[in-house]
Each structure stands twice: as C-alpha cells, then as structure tokens.
Amino acid sequence: MKTLYLLRHAKSDWDDPRLADHDRPLSARGHRAAATMANYWAARKGGPPRPELVVCSTAVRARATLDIVAASWGPDLPPITFDRGLYLCGEELLLDRVKAVPDAVAGVLFVGHNPDFQLLARDLCGRGDAGLRQSLVAKLPTCSFVEITVPDGVTWRDLTWGSCTLSGFIRPRDLEER
Image (spheres, rainbow, N blue to C red):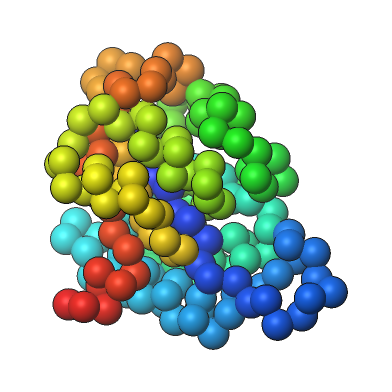
C-alpha cells in the first residue's frame, strides 16, 4: 500500500513588501504552528510519518516548515528533493509530479502550497471519513497535514481522481485545542 502525505507550508511573514513571494520567510505564528506539527508528529501513535522520499517546494517558507517538522524524525532523515516546480504549479502538474514518484517508494511527503494541495487532496480522495473530507474541502489552513492512502496494487503513475482514501487531516488549531 502507498501513502501520499501533504504538508502545506506554515504561515509566512509579509512584513517586508520588497520580498518576492517565493522568498518570504515564516512568521512567528508560522514557526509556532510548524513546531506544533513537529510535536504532534513526534507524539503521534505509531510515531511520525516515515516517508521514503520528501519532495519540497524551493520557496523559503516551505523549506523552513520542513526544517522544523523534520526534527521529529531525529537523525534518520529520508532523501529530500527540492523542486521549484511545486511552487504554484496547479493541480494537474502537481498530480504529474506525484505520478513521477518511483514505484519502489511506498510513502512520499510533498511540502508546498495552496490552492494546489487542497485541490489535489480533494480530487484524489473519493473515500474516507465524510467529516474530514468536508473539512478539507472547506479549507486547508497553513501547516495542515494530509494523509492519503492509495488503493492496494495501484502504482503512483496509475493514480486517478477519486481513487484514494483521505486517511487523516490535521490542522495546527486542532492540536492547540487538545
């Protein structure tokens, strides 16, 4: 069975209007949310997600989010690829990038942006808890974590819209309310 993990970058800082969107760092709130997600991953039943590959946008805020949450893995980091093409690429191109994951990889984490992540998760997941799916369709807040299960026997390149199961959807505020 294959698992696709999506982590939307944490909240970015807009204090310097001279910075290009791609170059914006995390805000103080973004740092807190990423630390909250890292703590959740570390304390999660079964431990943190263990993807065999991470594909991260080159945007500063995405890389910073990954740096913070990756601490939950300790020294055993999976291979990480930085892909500028994830930056606001659109849902179809994002799906193409997922389909290009080597078939030997059972779990992959993508770190990037909305609206692409929300649309991809919404349209891939034809199954799963109705309440979770409805929450995801309504909004994918910054630093939210999505877990998508691919049906047994389906390869990455054979993914189709509606074929997967939304197995998890965690927002930082869900963790802060606990």
